[in-house]
Length: 187
Image (cartoon, rainbow, N blue to C red; front, side, top):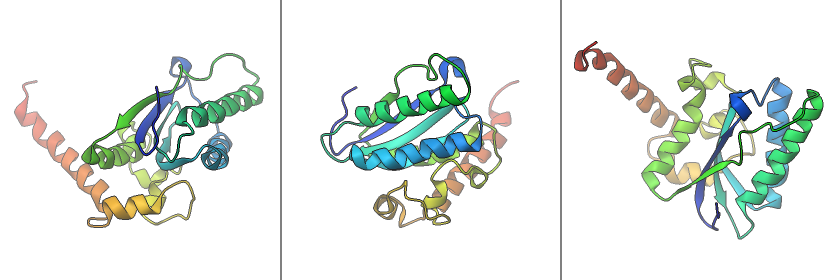
């Protein structure tokens, strides 16, 4: 995929054969450290992220003509090499190249942030996304002072409602549909 300057992209990948790509907290932290080191080098803005046991989701913005592809290649090759060395394994860690989708619709852009941050809840890993530390949801709701997020993005898109309320409204809406679903479909 060709990544273009001044565009947003949803990037995701999972472990080869759906295997885990994170075994311990230190694995998550190591990848986040690589994100921190490489985002400046490749002029990438990390808008939203969520690291899951066997996959990840990123919402990235390409700040200049350096490519997100280079950021992804450098970051995930380093991570895979370290992971393989630590766990005395060989072979591919990821299922293939990361998938990238251009985001050119503002409503989808805001929904994607919510989707990324609710991934641990939707996967049944936690009941509340505030129980999952490996996303930047806490930065979005101003409960952690991390550096892997863009405060101006949050102000621009979520200042009216507030991000936490934006997420909670969606959770409540999904619950309503589940509750009335039993009346709409025959079993």
